[in-house]
Image (tube, rainbow, N blue to C red):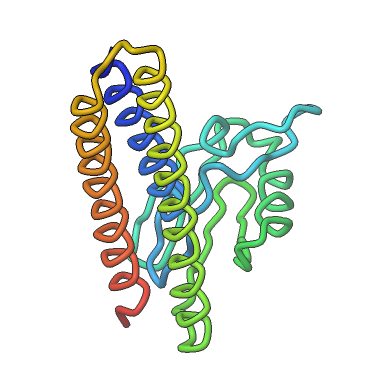
Length: 185
């Protein structure tokens, strides 16, 4: 029973970490990345479709994103979707291929992004602590139902705390890495 609680907590914390990684990938740093645009929704014959399902996205140069839609009729819709997104990027099209130049970030924008990634990391830590609380509640319930002794309860809560500390540390490392990437000129 306790092992199930540990596994559940660990898998939920892992999902929180993966979610944070995904959020970080979508953030614009000074460098071009397919992750910046691949989840942009494009109106494809009345259906909101992610860009990565409509086109090939490549990075020919460090500051350029190249998008090659498989259906040429959708080029203008892709351009509209990129302009509507909150990325602040301007697409250039030759009718077949869309190129996006990713300008270097200003110092002010870098500082805003650092604040944002810290906020995201803090939210992930809060989510991890909530998972810890849920696991500890389940352990207390087992103790109330006399399925485990008091000693086992304390050992189990210590183990949950160790798992929590491990994931909070992973969030910190992820934050550190992203911060360094943003501040890199």
